[in-house]
Image (cartoon, rainbow, N blue to C red; front, side, top):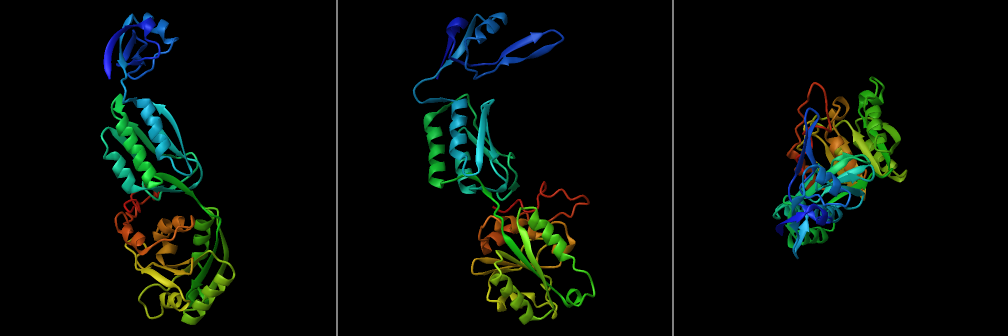
Length: 344
């Protein structure tokens, strides 16, 4: 990169190396031409009006990449499935969701890119629920001109990672729910779980295929779980009966149904007595009473992932510990808060 003085008329196509300020007394003070601007033919009269007959321009050498070109290349390399990009604007390229879904960030690749000299890629947290058009990330290089090798290194990281930023769309799944508890089964009290779960599921475009009720009986609960499998459920909720009370038999029933338990007990509050198990490829979620009484629980952290078809692992649940504490704010601002944002 070289700096040289050039007559304005001869500067078309070259890169401005500094801001050019305009001052109109009492009206305006600013930079109509900013550093990095590529000078156009129509800019020449305006520059002359500003008293600029000679200007400093950048002369790119072999191996130099202008910040705008670098931003575009980074945006293209980083944007995966379900992601679109726009820009550059002031050398920054923004990435947006191209569909409703779950944002997935390849955290190790993200960190590797940001460890390069002069490169920035900043994103929303991994596993954020997003809507089409939502801003997901921004990327740029720091200097006006960057080395071609730096851009190539970033592009290579993206290729090797296969994806860095993507949005996985939600599937339209059939969800069944077995509501347990003698008090509900015998109609001593009204069921509170059904409406809560229905609202959560329908908000993602899936549907509750049926609510079934069971007493505190291991065999009955297990039978109803298997009945929902036969009826084509993609996900099954089993609510209540998740504590250590002798009448709470839901964990035993989930095991009796033949499900393989991934994790019983989760480092999320509310949601400590949660269980995740799988009957083949069908997730079975044992939901404690907090799932009915609290607006936001561990269910809100894991249900979106299950609705994309992701198979949640024990490691995924353990990772919820970082950020898994709900602050129980007087006015809930979820998802614009820290709950569930620490795990990657």
